[in-house]
Image (cartoon, rainbow, N blue to C red; front, side, top):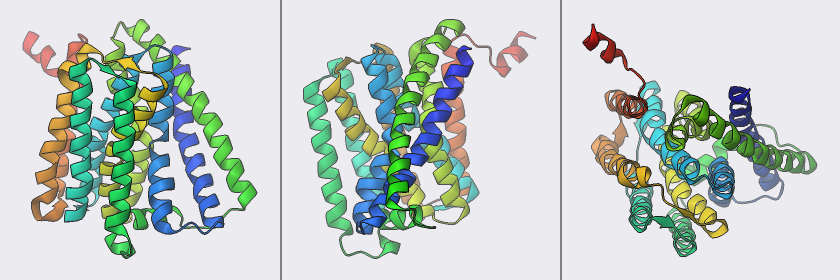
Amino acid sequence: MVHGILIAGLLLVLISSELTMRGAVGVARQFDVPPLFMGILVVAVLTVMPELFVTVRAATMGRPELALGGLIGSNILNLLFVMGLGALIHPMVSPPKVVFRDGGALLLACLGLIGCALAGEVSRVAGAVMVAAFIAYVAVIFITDWRRSQEHSVPLARAVFRSEGEIPSTIGSLFLMILGFILLALGAHLSVLGAIHLATELGWSETTIGLIVIAAGLSSPKLFLTLWAAVRGHTTIAVGQLLGAVAFSLTLVLGLTALIWPMPFPPALAARDVYILAGIGLILMPLLAMRWRLSRPRGILLILAYGCYLAFLLWQQGLPLPWSFSSVS
């Protein structure tokens, strides 16, 4: 029963995020929204809606471990496993503008997260600063991508990539968007409820459940989008999408959550995982800057790094690892 609730919630998050995206893109196309605006304000923002709904729901239920654990864990998974898997399928082009602008925004967002960890809480003041940082980041994207061609603008390419295919009617698009938001809210509630019961059943901390289980559910839409882009050779979109999604989630998602419901920063996350996330961002920048592409060997390195991180989390919960059996025997 517990597993069913959790799985149903995470599946609803995945399905509803796609419905919401399709509906919003359809509405934007019906009203001839310029591709740059669609790429940033529709596609990019809606990409982090699963994180927003789940994080807000967990915070309002008094579960900061699940809220922040899921948010931090999903970003670690995106930067290591999702990006590494995309590079393994097809080497991912990472133009200098994407690395410096979006990667720089990611690092600054990580610094803000570390500041909240040191303060011991994510306050409303911190939330307002994060939302202001998000607005500044969006302004920089508009300025740097204004009048650029699709090939040289990740938001433009992202908008074209997501809006390919038949244009649904306005009513149909609105229906998909509204239905997506309703299912997203339901999926967020079921995901948090199922995660709480799963932690009790397994005897694990809610922080670990957030870092592993909730994170996997939140990252699933980006995983499918990255794989789709990599298979079709749209690797610049994939890199910019992942870097921008992390920056958006640490500014817009966490900022809005803090404005709605301030929460304490769990000590376990403050002592370790925020620095792991920042360290990953710091190491990833030179990897992307090497010949301005993420090669397959470096993609494998990222996947192995996530495997080590996952093994460490499981070991902390007392789960025997394969090498533990060999050492005992």
